Each structure stands twice: as C-alpha cells, then as structure tokens.
Picture 1 (cartoon, protein in one colour):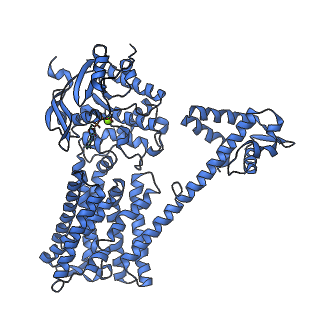
Picture 2: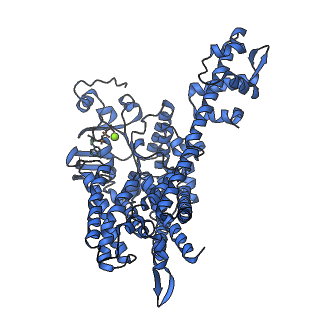
Picture 3: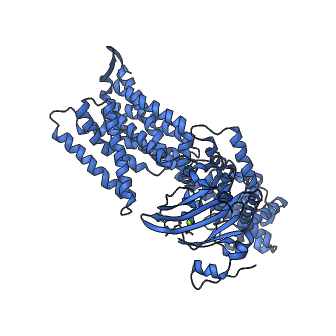
Length: 246
Length: 386
Ligand SMILES: Nc1ncnc2c1ncn2[C@@H]1O[C@H](COP(=O)(O)OP(=O)(O)OP(=O)(O)O)[C@@H](O)[C@H]1O
Ligand SMILES: [Mg+2]
C-alpha cells in the first residue's frame, strides 16, 4: 500500500511524561476506512497514543502522519471524542452549545458560529437521539447522555478520521448500541474510526480492525486474523484468558 | 453629590467590570487563586516601575508590573511541572517571596518616594479625583479614570473578539488544541489581561483587595446562571453594585472604601448562597423536602395498587403499614386527594382511574429509569408542584 492510503501512519513513536516513557517505539499503520479498536490494560498508554496523534502531547521521538502529512496540516480532517471525565460538566452552558463547539475548527479564529452551524449541531443532536435535550444544562445530563453529546460534537466536525477515547464508558446497553450503529454508519461512509475500547467480548462484533497496545505496540491488523488468545495474553499478561465468541 | 464623588464612583464601577470579566474565566478555570498570587507579586513591579517613572499611573509602570504578574504565573507553573508540589503549594511558594521583596524595597526607600504600603494594599480611591490628566493644559478628567477606562476597553475588545475561543479552551482544552486554538496562547492572553487589570485597579481598590473583585462577583453569578454570557453580565452587575454601594457605605461609616466594597461583595455572596433559586441552601432544602413528599406519595399509591384487602387500605393503618419516615401521612393523603388520585370511602382509600394511570406510569419510570418518561409524567400529573 502507498503511504497516502493510510489514514494514520506512526513511525518509531516514543512518548514520555516527565522524561519517563509511557509509549515505546510504536509503529502503527491504520488503513483508511477501518473501524478499529485500541485495546490494552489501564495505563497502557491508549489515551496517550490518541493525544500524541492529535499533537496534544509532544512525542520525544518519532513521527505521526495523517493521510501522509503532519497532523498540523490536517487538523480539519480529524475529530476527537475525549474521555468524558476530561472536561468540567459544571461549565455554564447547554448541550446545543457544546455540540456547536465542533464547528469552531472550520470557523477559525474570531468568526462566530451562526445559523448554518446551529443547523449542523441540531442535525447531529438528532442523529444521536438527543434533540429533546438540546437546551439542557450539561451538568443535568446523565453520563450516557454526556457521551452522546460528545459524539454529536465530533459528528459536526465532519472529519475523515474519528478518534474516540472510551465512548462506551459508563453507558447502558441501549446507548452503546446507538453509538456503535452511528460508528458503523460512519465507516460505511468511508470514514476511519479509532476507538479505545475496554470490553474485549464485543471487539469481534463491533470492530473490523484491532490494535493491541501495552507501552509497546503488540499487534495490529484485521480482527479475524489477530484477535486471538496469543495476542491477548501478550497484552494483558500471562494468565489472561478470554472467551472470544466468534 | 460632588463632582469628585461622581468620579470616584465611575472609577470604581469601571474597575469592577474590568475585574469581573477575566475573573469569570479564572473562576471557571478553577484558577482564582492565581489572581491572588499575581496581585501580591506585582508589588515588586509597581515599586520598580515607580522608581523609574515616578508616576503611579504611567503606562510603563503598568506594563512593568503586569510583566511581574506573568513572571509569577510562569514560575508557579514551572514549580508545578516538577510534580514535587501541588499547584496551591507552588502559588504559596512564589508570591510571598516576590511580595516581601516589594515590601522591603518600599521600606528601604520610604524616605525618598511617595509610595506607602497602605496605598498599595488598600488603594487610595478617595484621592483619585485629585490626580488629573492634562492634555495641552486642558483637564480631561482623573488619570486613574483614563487608565482603567483604557484597560476596560481593551478587555471588552478582546472578549468580543475571542469569546468563542475563550469559552472553548476553558471548557475543553483538548478540543481547543485539536481545532487549532492554542490553549497556551489563550491561557497567557487571559493571564496578561488579568495582570494588567490588577495593576490598573490597585490605585482604586489596592493590589490585594482587587482579588475580591475578581473572584467574588463571578462566584456569586455562577450560583445563579447556566449561561456563560449571563454569568459575565451578572458578575459585572454584582461588581458595580458592590463598588457603588460600598462607596456610600464607606462614606456613611467613614471607613475604608475598598474594605466596604469587599464587605458588600461578601454579603451579596452570602445572600445568594443562601437564597439562590436553584442551588441556594434553602431551595435545596426545600426541594429535598418536596422530593420526600413525592416519593412518599408514590409509595402510598403503589401500596394501594398492590393490596386489595380493605384492612391494608384503611386510613388509620397507613402510618403503620408504610414507613413514611419524616413525612406525615396526613400530608400525603391530602395531596393524593387534591390530585384526584384516590377516593376515601368510610376511611378506606381507593385508587381512582387517574390514580391507577399515574401509578402505572410512575412504576414504568422507576423500572426503566428513563428520563423521558418522568419528563412527560411531570408535565401531565405533577399538579402538586405548584
Ligand atoms: N499527565 C500525565 N502526567 C504524568 N503521567 C501521566 C499523565 N497522563 C498519563 N500518565 C501516565 O502514562 C501512562 C499511560 O497513561 P494513559 O492515560 O495513556 O493510559 P490508558 O491506556 O489510557 O489507561 P486507561 O485505560 O486507564 O484510560 C500511565 O502510566 C499514566 O500514569
Ligand atoms: Mg485512557
């Protein structure tokens, strides 16, 4: 495959917090149009990997290319759904407003969002089934609803690549299904989705691509080829056994 | 009211608004204490600036002092980044050091300079009208009015231009960064505005009490609104109100102006904290009570639905059969009757069709835990809220 066919290509990436590496020499090629899970134990560096793709954390070595170019030149092609706990939900604003923030990137500095942006936000809210809550103060939303708001915000970014950090964290079965359906829909529309995921049981059902990560990159490829006990054991430790329903 | 009095109040009001705007963002970013650090450490900058310019209102002095504020922020962040101490500790390490240097500088040179610690700490608003700005021999008003006026104008201009960016980076730094709005630039922009404002305000309310004007109005407004724009407006309003009423209080009591303003700010916060409609102490207590009543009503109705035995439905047995907690059975019974949920026949309670419907729906809400179900329920049934 040619380089530009990779949505994301990571070479020799090493990331450290206070000079203590938490990601060692990662090589990762993510083809365009996959729905990919990143799995690994707590502290494996999954969030860190996503943040370094987005340049939120500067790596101490290595490169990240987004469609063959540095992230800085591709900002508008990438949408990010952070871990829900990363923001203060007591911030004085309503759901619709948070979703509109997704349009700020295409607006650039100074310009304000207008009717067009509002319409986009309302459509995204509709898609995630949250239209009825558009005027609700964000602290008065349940955890699953907050997650949907984040998803809607990513949808209005209208990106080619979606990076999501544990979108299923603390949501009920209905919301999980709603979210995965939207993700699958996005993949059918040709988008690339990269999702940090903890529930190993659902990996084969939800995803077609998987990356095993634990400080080092362990394996990455199609779920049907590499989602096996061998890789799971390498990632999670020697005694790890999981019932994989194929 | 004399001309000087009017001028003092205008200055105080402008200071209040100039403080409330950056203050709102500082409070939301949980960085209110950094303003305390800035306000103390700028003393060094003010003293040094005064040695150079000999004029407390000189723009050079303001810039020098504001620079000390930024240096403070950088130092605090540097110490914090080592991960050896927490942020509040880092703040506590930096500003007393800088502040004491300022105090020593003043004490050492007290004989040659007209600058005393009281003036810097508490402000000299009462004297502000006497220091006039003359252009070509023409008096165009007090100097400090112009200083704070210019600062406020710039603050409002920046707020207008970068409102969206400030909001985004305050709510979600990560998204701001990924969308190309550098949180670092916005952070230091906010810090610079805060520093300049604090320096500009020290003439009026002193470099230390200015912290009250930065923190208290936004903290009060935060209890009253869910909307950032309204929070900015309310903060400004509280600030101006405290500034003007504080001035008159000081006049009346012959007390310090800055001290009176701070007192008013404290009283306003306390009142709002107690009486705010949604988050106030009393309204929370009231809501809890109301919820207790609502839950008890549901328990009562479910009990009626579950038991056909008249003995179980006898009014006098209600208190024994259902553990009401603190709520009186009489209140519940009246509430149920008022809503036509039950009829009482020879002291035996019986659910009406409306009561049946309500109970069934409430049950559905409880089991599915669906937000939307309760919303509809409230709209159609909860007559007892009013
Ligand atoms: N800001 C930080 N400063 C210092 N160390 C950090 C910081 N953030 C993360 N770490 C460390 O880096 C390592 C990787 O963290 P990361 O958040 O990427 O893990 P993760 O795989 O996302 O874990 P989880 O499943 O718990 O979300 C952990 O050991 C963590 O303690
Ligand atoms: Mg994580």
